[in-house]
Length: 207
Image (tube, rainbow, N blue to C red; front, side, top):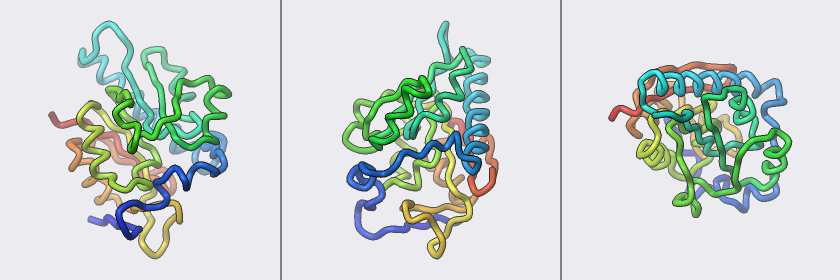
């Protein structure tokens, strides 16, 4: 199993608002390197939502999906084509808010894993794509998600190592390490895919 902590101290600078407040918007849905993993994430979210509905886990309403680090709303816009899904998101990078109206999605500017955590509404399906590698404590974040969500859809690079990684990342995992991260949060691994440099997991809460 491979997991690597890429920062020193208690809080990596890449997880702070100060680091993100002036970063440029990243329209990942419009970028050829990112669109395939967003489309695969959509497929996994839809799979989880359909299983919730088929199992009778929701009554007379849509399957709820929260994108906890939604960026400029690319994944949320893909989910808008599915009437059986109610999806919303959160992101604290100011430049990303410009995309929410353009993509006609529901999102709010909150620090999900920090000061605003108590204000967050977690859906039955929780999404953390390209999020966990930026956090000070991704293990605690997954456990917190597991307190509310029945399903999790997560993605992260799978080939990064201490000697070669994005300078904006505080953690790196290989395939086995990423599975272990999700399992310690109470999720069984249903699907684990690679899409280019990204790994995507669909996990089901075990209890």
